[in-house]
Length: 317
Image 1 (cartoon, rainbow, N blue to C red):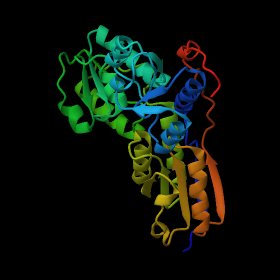
Image 2: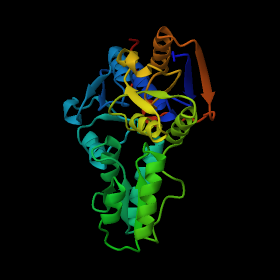
Image 3: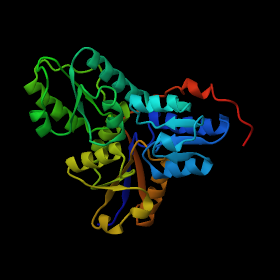
């Protein structure tokens, strides 16, 4: 059976937090005097980072690499309080591009810690968002990654336990872990609004929708992108073969032997031009129909940080 149809998931690609973070860097490059440094990848996508680097952004791993008094931007994933303190100590002009939905989780962590709760953070060890959130209340937070860990995690007072989550997790997996925690801690307290972001939920639901037809699903995103990895897992949980690819160059035609319909989506940090390049590649492999399946329309946007307005004006570049 030859490849005939490409089914595009929508929503896909950039979320409001990613759009905001990229615009922060672009605006800073336009406004700031001198070089603009970005701590870590502004978002987890090498194409985005490369494009901003070509515009003049300088990416560093740690603030100690930034000359004192320079402009430094924190990534969309958020940072721990000690990173903010390091920025103040070194007299950096800091612009915080943390996604507001991640900031919400930081605020929750601090609130629960002040109230004396043991905080169970559902997330992935070493992810930048998790590192930043745990830094808000390191003595109070315990990381929980699996149902097994949920069944074994130690707390000070079983009647005083709260749960928060990384924003880019699998909705289904997180629900299972929370249920396991509730079995152990009936008084478990959760935020009034769940932490997994709207874009993560929408993109996962859109993948489930196209998985009803598509036999193979391509997820365009970086291999260090948590939400992109989760999209691949959601597709596999729906019974479909799924491949996480950085761009069209990684497509293997053998994936589509005997396949009539391929689904395509992209993680929240992947530019739309990568999707179009993948669609073009699939058309060259024989696809003659391209259909977009829109599950829900997104209209979320976030304002830019006030620190941008405070930058010393630069001469035109």
